[in-house]
Length: 318
Image (cartoon, rainbow, N blue to C red; front, side, top):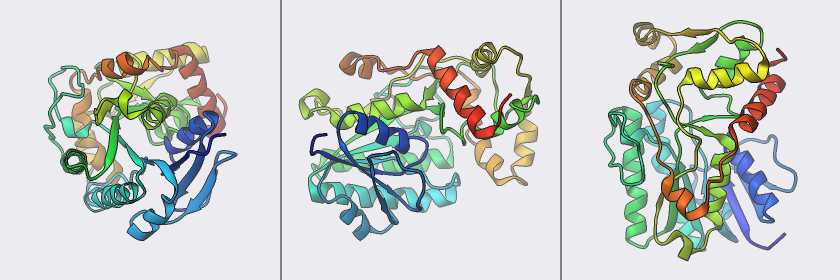
């Protein structure tokens, strides 16, 4: 193990496998989270509240790299308050200790793209409340980078799937019924091509950005993280069917019902404004990352097997 300390804020879907990836690379890892829980063997656990600036500074003491993998409850009103606060605190803390800040972000700020592939040059054009919040927070970060106030790099990913992905399209609400022989549920159009990022690949991509030299990054503050080719949700389900050896029926929630249920079920209300991402092809172009760092993408079969093994462990056996 080398003496380089990497501090990860957030131990959820991506923070946990990121810690595993960095530990395997011989890094010292400090995992910062709000509540006690599962931590990869070898990682240091630090409990605290990232909305407190003083705590963030204390958590980052000695760090070479700081990772922002936090995401508050999926609610636009909460995001409007929490996301800027998280970003401000981690930018200040990373800058104070001279660390590189690596930020995990999504694609909400890009809005509707008419099916055109999204890359680092795609302009922000949000069409949702959550997208507008993400756009403001991202531009604040990039302004600080341009002004030399912080050394930071941002890795963007589309919708996740894979181990620990409980709150994804192929998470709890899909696997719980499927593994008891019932149809899976899709709240969005399952027949348009969509980029799904495999969670361990997201973790590896962030680790790559964190460990890269400044010369390798060449001043690029924004990167699309590596991903498998875009497919429809039905294509994804067909891969799971092949591995399970049986059909997976799918119930598709009509848009009118999604809109109506949004008034009753808060989570569906938050999802409905993002359903546009499945109305037309939603495709990530990760060619810049691949050209600089190589593919770093898990094979489809291995990803499907690992996802299914996790789902069976978490939600029961088929």
